[in-house]
Amino acid sequence: MNQSNNKHVPGFDSKDIWQQDKDHHMHPWSDMHSVKEHGAIIMEKGEGCYIFDTNGKKYLDSVGGLWCNNIGLGRSDMAEAVAEQITQLSFNSTFNDLGSLRTAELAARIAELAPGNLNHVHFTTGGSTAIDTAHRLIELYHYVRGNTDKKQFISRENAYHGSTMVGASLGGKAGDRQSAHSYLNTIHHISNPNYYRAPKSMSEAEFLDMLVQELEDKINEIGADNVAAFFAEPILGAGGVVVPPEGYHQLTHEVCKKYDVLYVSDEVVTAFGRLGHWFASEDEFGIVPDIITSAKGITSGVLPLGACIFSDEIFETITADDSGVYFSHGLTYSGHPVCCAAALKNIEIIENEGILEHVKEVGPYFGEQLETLSDLAIVGDVRGSQLMRCIEFVADKETKTDFPEEFNIGKWVSDHADKRGLMIRPIVNLTVMSPPLTISKEEIDFIVSTLRESIIATMDELREKGLWGGDKGS
Ligand SMILES: Cc1ncc(COP(=O)(O)O)c(C=O)c1O
Image (cartoon, rainbow, N blue to C red; front, side):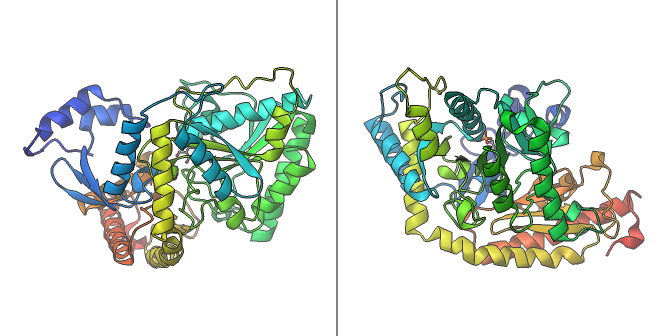
């Protein structure tokens, strides 16, 4: 992304700002050389589904920030709620026996909205820290029950659970594993449930059986007495918006119950409306997990907040004896009153504006319209659910042959989309989309027509450079 030709924008010099970012801001998850060479697009303001860079260029943000802008950018009602809380109580610690009004109110509200008996919440600063909290809580739970060997965890290939030591170790995306970093060796990965990449001869039912059996085999291989928990996103997000075969979560949940393995549903992306429900675990996938981790849409990304939501059973277990069992975990900003006020306002807005119902209306439309791109020669798979969608690009549809990873083909498409005023998220050979939940059908039409143009422009460029068989293109 190159924004070096910035014009002067009243109020600040956009060229200076661009340079300051280039010289001093280390971006997360970035190609160090590329950002150093080309700089970044610097955003100035946002309104609803739109974001504007410092040149005044307008983009439809089909990424929803980073799966988190649920209610739309720039809302004054949210600003007022946050400002009011800052004036009333801008911070207090929730360590030990301290609390705050909004924190208690939000915990109770989440207990109401969460499935089954998930009635207890530990607040964190985001998704990764909610995952760390779950890990700590699980260790404590097994410890007080005398199961001190239960220290091994199971996750899946292509999973994404964040960027802290625990989150990164649970993560299963091969490309994310950098040799510079170390990872926990107590985490084991099983196959990801992407039927598009299943062996060609396998039916979906056979694929499902294989996945469930693999989990059971993995538990037995490690030894059930050693396995503490299974972590799973209801739909794998950053790993390619993978919707598992129907029944997958119910069957894996049953396997976990059979072996006294806790089931953690990582709803950092899927909770708070993205699939048309407060939480997807039960309403969409029919399970009540032991723990749900959540973040992002909980405040619509307005302020950083995460939540580790857990069952009565876990709560009763860790609070049962009075011998001084201590939860030695927590963050300065756990239960921050201003972030909790933002979350309460966010929930109120989602409820008052019928946003969950809106998602159920526009979500299928988004899917149908994206499907129309399947006629394009490099569109291998179009998948997802409601407002969580993905396109997988391939060099050959028949054989599902990938473009070489170093092509970073998703980035080619997103560069063409940027020029046309559409932000999409490239992940190697994928384009991932998670627009604000307030998106209209007209805006969806813009996304799909701009994507078509951008994919065609990418195919033309590939042909021009002689990097792809032009006669195969449409
Ligand atoms: C499923 C899932 N879990 C955890 C995380 C980590 O959240 P955060 O970036 O807020 O730490 C993410 C972030 O994208 C996520 O998608």
